[in-house]
Length: 345
Ligand code: DOR
Ligand code: ZN
Image (tube, rainbow, N blue to C red; front, side, top):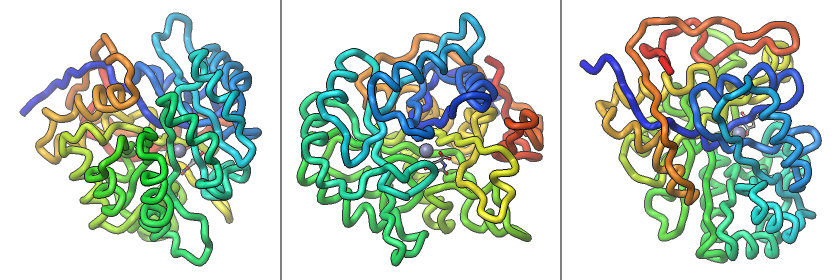
């Protein structure tokens, strides 16, 4: 049995680094494992302009130890009033890597999100023309649609017409959770990819109700039933270049999770690579791990592969119950469990 696993330094194509004290507490976990990360713009207020993104990037770099080799890739939060010219200029200047589309009210800090995606014609035409990826939180927000169906309905009602209207628009369907999304991405005659989180590979919706209500297993899109988890797992280990690593690590202070109305988000950054390694190991697919973690995403984005390497070692170490204290105390994904791996460096 392989005891050590060495791969090209990977990237995280979807992460929430937050701001202020939480940024200072969590950024190092992502920078330790990954060469680059696509940083989500759902701050309060959201990052909607190139100037705000440039300032946020400076704050991220300032939160890291001197000499840390990590590149935050910034995203623009789309609203009904997004300015196509500012987005294009921000992209040309190397500030923006991609745009993020949150349907209004789909998730944390999405109140300013887009109310009618197909009405964003000017922005979408611009993205298509300049080859800038559109990253999508793929859930409808119609309250009459069951929460467990919102992704599949989005694929049918929104994503399918979007790909028809904008045939050359680069799209990443973020944090996929369903067989429908996995099949659409695998088969579409379109430049489309998808990120996959550790939690959607490792646990199903039973985890939210396991002996009681489990707020730390609550994220959006919400975990789905087992058949969907298995479909998403097959996609991840399939070797298809359309599927790549995106943790969606989303820290919330303990009190905001353990609450009468707990926030959505799972903080998986401290042991992200270990969690993915466990999945690929269980599937007998460790030979495909490097592609998923370190190659497919970069190629999709048209960026060079990282130069360095990282090593993981088999190890029974247990994930701590809590990380940080006070305003930044967060319960990590898999608290109290072992991933079976340890990130060596
Ligand atoms: O669970 C989630 N948490 N899903 C999202 O889409 C947003 C994220 C957050 O920012 O907390
Ligand atoms: Zn996210």
